[in-house]
Length: 362
Image (cartoon, rainbow, N blue to C red; front, side, top):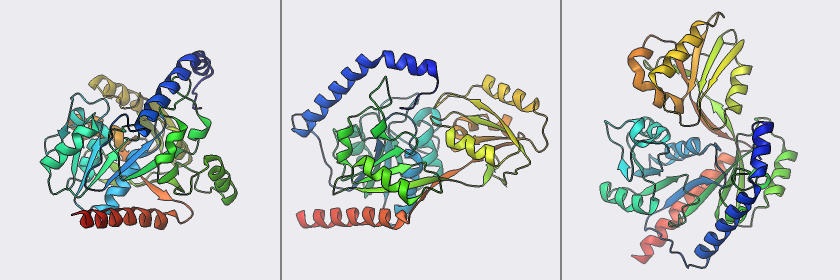
């Protein structure tokens, strides 16, 4: 279980009866879907779902980004996310004037990185899919971001993510733990990916994790680690290198900053961190506090570093940030144990088989 402090751990354990009740409710709900007492709808185009069984950051956004980069040259893509903490409701399709406030930070990342694909948000994916197809009838494939629990839709392919440092097999139901679904739901996945692994993960530990996850015959377990790219300025986009002589002020509002802080610590002379809640909406007062903290740092070559996810919520202050040394650290995923070829083959085979079956039906 991913407990942050002794006091939080103690408090969450006191909530164990609620967690047990929550787990029972989930079990009943999933049973009703499994028995077809609750309706689940499929669509006549390939839908790939990226999700997890827990709350918190397992790396869904980098995985969706990887899939988009992999597939957008061959197919007309659309992505649908919930748009967590956005200040709008219902279905919304991103356009040239869309902001992170309207669609949320992660969908905004997709929109900025991939302006050539359809990026939509909607709490009810069962409503959002047909609306996206109406708005973009040329769409050939849809990627659902964080929709593993949304069983009103039956995706053609499920990718289940679990964090190396907090495998779902070691977790418990909310609010005592971080699970928001039954462990048995993992059976719906075709691929299980253990994310945020150390780069030097060994074969022995890999096999131990696979044994713990107990994959079914139809499932493939793969492993990824985080790859950090080159810094770029939040406004000008000009690149910069992270120097081991630099003093860093890390500005971060993500669910699991552990891997990031470790990377910054290993690649700078020293660092300070300003942590905000996940999906934090930055105010002008936050920006003033950030700059004040930066000004009080005395090290040589100091600069501010933030994540791409935070950057889409900070860039609204582009006038103030224009002359500030605020740099963005991009991330991507890297497959371990030559898993990339396996992953791409599984995805390609799914799309080909789905398309062939659809053609036979028509």
